[in-house]
Image (cartoon, rainbow over all chains, first blue to last red; front, side, top):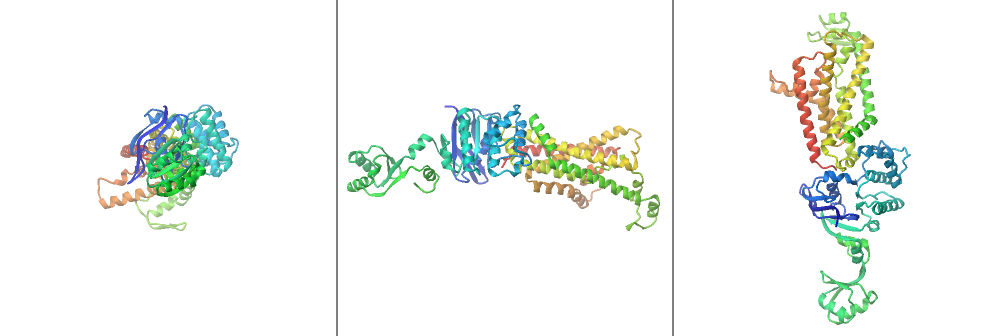
Length: 302
Length: 280
């Protein structure tokens, strides 16, 4: 497996607070890695460490399999927190400035990236007068200037209107597919992220609690009957022998998720009770992607 | 490094702040010339003669006769004497403080520094490029003041005495003053890189220029030493003290030593702080 980014016990401490705590992250080549976490969970801090804007307190990381981070960062484009640009320059002026600074000889690259993000290269409006969405687009254009192999975007669709969100989503999918750019993207708009991401990482209180693929996510979010009983082993036996249900999984917290016979919730309840099992909870669950993330992040349970 | 430097130089010359500072530098020089012109008309040889004998009142201004008052300077004004006085006031230093603060801190407030630092450029190179470009800005501001005062002074009173080793003295004068401005710029870049906030950086840098000399003089009064004065080793004072093309050797040596120390200390400290610190 070829990884674009791997971290090993990556930690960042601010005073007494661990903003990022022993994170082991794995971003595979070709991934669109959706990075999810509440405000202050450590997403931006981790991205800053990867891009060299913040020094790790502990731990190691590799970019493109190499520990020579300074060299490899030339292959990374990023938009961290707010887009960085010069307010007194136009979109073209800004992109041209950074094109020269990055040592990119192809002059047409400026127009190309502006076209990608839907900004007019002939517009002389100063960037300081841009709307929030236009500023985000400019930030993304600058991050794409040097034809990066790895794109790190921190909340890139903040401030974009629905049309803009779709354009950026289509652009990222296109870049990922046609130019094989690996993307690490954080966003609070989970629904939008789910239309893009091929892999997810969930960060909570600085700790990366889970990494899973979009296929695994679909599996986890499958509609099911969630039943809480006092004896899961006996319940599982009854499901198989009496109700002929084999598609289920036993969870740790005295619960079982049943993936078939979803329209027989009453029969399942009756059968379990008739077999002297104490049913404390029985409900339809799973399904909703946002709910699943909320559950992982410690919000309301689905 | 080459690309950063090229881009930074381009940014300096497109900077409205730099243009405004240059215009203010020229205007302040014109005001200085005008005030010298007025004073040269007030301090006539007769006025000075009277002043040396008694308290004199002319044009509504009172003076106490004193041996220390050398008003004959105003009767010997020229393009060269005005050029020599170019660094005497705080004009160049104050404008430089404003320029450096805005030029450096805008990078942080606008977030553009993140684009540069995250591209894998060495932080030391980024710092060095910023420092070099600020030095270029400072030298250009100095040249604007030098040219305005020299040309204006020449128009009003003629070029002045160019005898002796004029070219050699002029080159030494310019070389030392530009070097001291470069060292002073190092201090300002260091402050701006640490503060990273435009308003705060302007306030600190301008206060340093305006009050450091006074504070050191107060300190000297407190220690009351006849052999050592801290104020003599403050770079701002040395810049202001060099007001003659033929610089006394003691002042020249002290200026070079203070300049080298200031430059090295602020550059190393600033580069290290920028290298080790996080960018928010």
